[in-house]
Image (cartoon, rainbow, N blue to C red):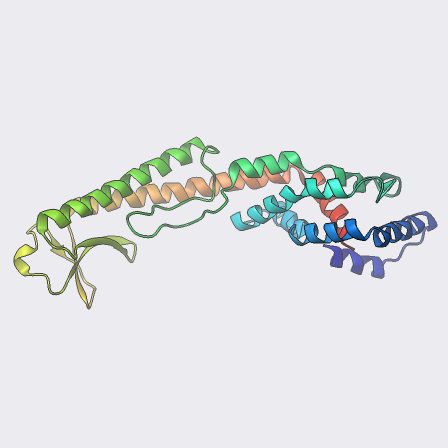
Amino acid sequence: MGARLLRRWVAQPLTQLAPLEWRQEQVSRYVEDTVRRGELREVLKNIGDIERLVNRVLQGVARPDDLRRLRDGLRTLPRVAALVDDSLFPNMEAIDDDLTSAFDVCADALDLLERSICEEGGDKGDGIERPPQPAIRTGYDAELDAVMTTLTTLHDELHRWEEREREQTAIKSLKITCHKGGWVIVTAKSTPGHLIPVTYHRVPGGTSDDRWTTYELQEHETLLQRNRARLQELERTALARVIADVAAHKQQLLGAARTLAEIDV
């Protein structure tokens, strides 16, 4: 942020004496206060480019990772506000009203992101024990939570079904896995034929193993696919709502970004 602002300063130099003197005074205070300057430098390293992230939100193209980075940056603003006070940057509002937003730590926007976006998420899941994990935090959208609960239950049932089949068939190598979007039963090539139940139907694929399906597994797969599709739809809708709600704090966010850029320069 500071680099872009510095380029603008060079390209558009000040023509009024008062703001020029104010800027020189602030640079002098900043240079003299070496301890606080060092603390600010360390804090600013962890904030990221809030201006760029906010612009992605305003354009409606922000991804969950963008929202996480924005949230991480906003979490640091109270520390910046504590370091940047009137003793270091006095009369900021006298030069530019927008600079008073340094003391607005965008608490409402941060609260929204804390309530809506998971620390990690967007995982599509891997295997029967890991259902997909949406980027939206539990508790933000009741309908999404309900679908996620259903998916977790379906994965738990699939895991129990796998254990039951392994026990009943005495095929130790038996496992259920997702292959090309569909669930199949996998057994080793060396599995004796008499152990394979008559309800198993062979499916193509596999050079080092045999793959099977059953009517029960196909019905379960249909339920999984239906709920996964619904989860993706609800997640997109919830994410769009979060982006719109964050964008409503445009003035405070861009003001804070501008002040951070001033400090960063």
